Length: 298
Ligand code: NDP
Image 1 (cartoon, rainbow, N blue to C red):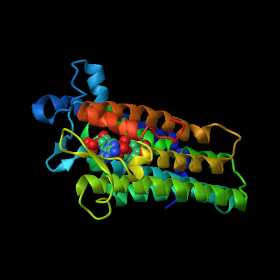
Image 2: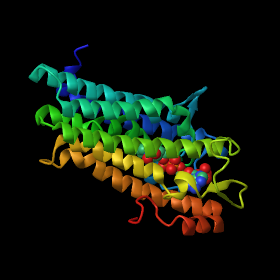
Image 3: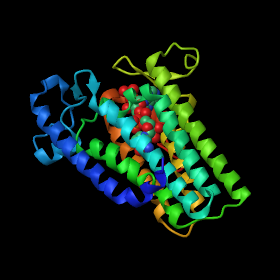
Image 4: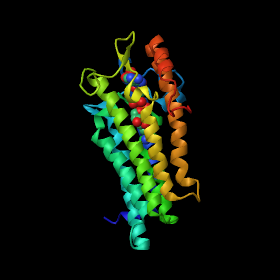
């Protein structure tokens, strides 16, 4: 397929994706008034129509068995993102004859990230987006427009600003992405396994503390290192995706800057929810594991 055309079509496609996310959010907002009380999210029912439209009133809206939020969280946006990246790679081939090392790294790293997310798709069921947040404009726009069109900025940048990358530089960047991926995958899998089956042999040896809800909290292993090791790994990868684009422009660093702000804010939101859920046990956890994301820094 002549995917290189995506380079010229990126703006109209982005406008369409924004339009679709507005239409979907309006549909979700309107249908939520027919949803039963138990199907509504806690945070998205303040009575302020603008706020509720943004955050989302209904928790997991479905058409028959088709779960709209579960579908949108991973499929269209993430797959769209790697297709756009591939389009940029093909545009580079059209312009310069072969893909650059920087373009191959950006495509390879992000393809790994997306493949991992789809391979471990069921893990999304324990994330805040699915469990706590309603499905409204924030997630619809994020999933359908924001992710594919802003997460692909590095590849778009490389089409217009080719970069030469030394073997040593590329090795360092691959190493950084590898370390980030390892921390991200191991910590997410450890928590998912623990939540699914705390007696499983891979997690049974870990130290935990009891909470009043009956659920336990991990205080050793990855979750005893910092309180959000998965965010740390994700941020290391985000940096590795920007570095192949060189240091001449801030645009390819947009993702890592935005993502740091998003994850610091997300961590604070999660912290608030966990404190409300687990009370004193959460305070004990925070004393045992004092750093939130970056060891000895934050
Ligand atoms: P997390 O997977 O970090 O889940 C947080 C929940 O884990 C808490 O609410 C709590 O829920 C449980 N938990 C916290 N501490 C412990 C502990 N010590 N022991 C056991 N359970 C604990 O939430 P996210 O949805 O924020 O992140 C999931 C992944 O998605 C991350 O890797 C993140 O980086 C990534 N992500 C990527 C984004 C992107 O745009 N690329 C955007 C957002 C997230 P409970 O106790 O109820 O189980």
